Structure formats: structure tokens, C-alpha cells
Image 1 (cartoon, rainbow, N blue to C red):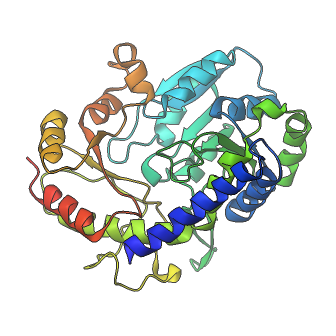
Image 2: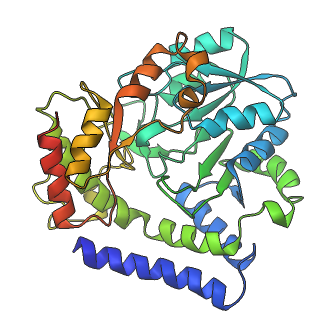
Length: 369
């Protein structure tokens, strides 16, 4: 079933991209508009713009917020390196924060220390599909721009004053603005680019004044939007498959010596990631399973070599992070982030994994050195 369904999605992606090429409409146009409409429906945001680079998305967010040049912006040491580079390139000062080693995220206490160092805004990366205690962070009264590139689809539970469950809030709805990058390893990919979203109408009115003036060369081309549009449309089905595979990997690792990150909630155990009921209503959405990270107690190099012998590619989880970019400079300040940078590995977790591939990865996870 995984192979059959994945083949169907692959054909949809190819058809959408090929249609753009055949029609010779690969620049920003109709599909950009359709993609934005899909984004608004998926995230429940009031407005959005699809751009060619994450740096462009951050640039327009900061313009709309009227943050004076030279001010300090808080970023996580485990955020993607573009956070640091874009902040500097746009004329601001990055203040890099350490993380909680149980989940790789910043906490209220960590952010508070950053505010005392002069931080005026928080660019919040929601790493590995896990949401931080974001409402506690917002209570610090610091403006937040969410990076939902790994957490898209996550819904945090909410309760009324009597403790009864109410409609939860989606990742991307907490910040003043939100950025969704669309790179190769993001949970939603378009082969590159980024979407800048305004969750509320008041912020969109301000942002729209700037995005209406965006040059065509900064807008995301239709050929990328075609792929992103299909990915969004099929997101729930892909996430069902990912979460069932994640549950199987998780169950395998629970008794092992290596550690998993603490998530907003755990996935229900599954004996078979394909044949079980795949109803969307039965899938927990309090974490997005964009990847399977494992914090190793042994050498990352040894684990990579062991997995490679079994034809399984294991990647360093934070090889493109801020700490990777500025390791020497940040080693003493960001001790926990550096430890995770050196010890955290990513195992394959894709909706297109076949039965045999899943079984092979489970076997590797069960016998890791």
C-alpha cells in the first residue's frame, strides 16, 4: 500500500510540474496564487506570500514590524544556519541561544536570558516537528516570528476554563508572522523557496503594503509552486504514513540505550505501519513527524558506518545549523546545543519507504552499536 499510494503522489507531482513546463508557465503566476490559497486554508492564516528564499521572507517580515537596523534578534543555536546569515545580512545582530537537551528547543528561561542580553525579537525555530512551550514564551512580551518549516501540521491542544478540550492552535498561529521554508528536507517541500504568513488580519494589512511591491524575481515560480501545491494537498495522507512508521521506530528504540526527544505527545504503537486503520481522525497531530532523530550514546561516526553497511543513510541532525556554522565561537556558550550537534542522528523517515525498507531500518535501530 505504501508503494502504490506513493506512486500515485509521485505521478501527481510530476504531472503538476510537467504541466507548467508544457504550458511554458514556469514563472510566478496562476499556480503561485493557487498555492497561496492552499497555504491559507492549511494554516488558517489571513494572508501569505510565496518567495524564492527564506532570507526574503525574513526581510519583509522585519520591514512590516519596523524593527530598526542594528537591533538584536534571538535565534537558536540549532536553528538552520540561514537564520544567522540572514539576520546579519539584513543589518541586525544575532544573539544565539542554547537549548533544552531533552527536545532541542529554546525555553522560556533561555529566551528570558536572551532578552536580558538585549534581544528585541525572537526568530523561533520549531525543530524536529516539536513545538516549544510557546505560550509561556509569548508571555515574556517579546515579538515572535515562527519558523514552522519542521512543525507544519502540528496542533497544540487547548482547554477552556473548566478543563474541557477545545479547538487547538496550529503551528504558525502564535507569532506575529510565520515563515515556512520549502527546502529539500522540510516537511513540505517545493524544491526551494519560502512562504511568509500573517496569521491575523491586522498584521496582513501591514505586511501586504510591502509584499504588493515585491519584484517578480523574488516571487516563487509556478514550477516550484506546483510541487508545493501537491505536497500540501497530500500532507495529511503523507503524515499518516510517516506517523505510523515513526511509531514503529519509536517502539523499537524504547528499550535501547539511545535516547529520543521528548515530544508534545507520543504516537500510538503500531504493529504494521501500512495495514492499520489510516483514518486521519486516528492520527495524533500534536507533533509533526518530519523526521526520526535519535540522540546517540555512542559515536555518530560509528553509527553512520554501521548503518551504511546495511544500505541505510544516517545523517547528522544539525549539520546545517547555526552551531555548525559558528561552532568555535559558540562552543562555550551553547554547551547543550553543541552536544546535540555532535550526537544527534537522523534516520530515514519518508512516506515513500517500502515495507522492506522500513523493516531494514527497524533491524538497524534494534542493533545499533
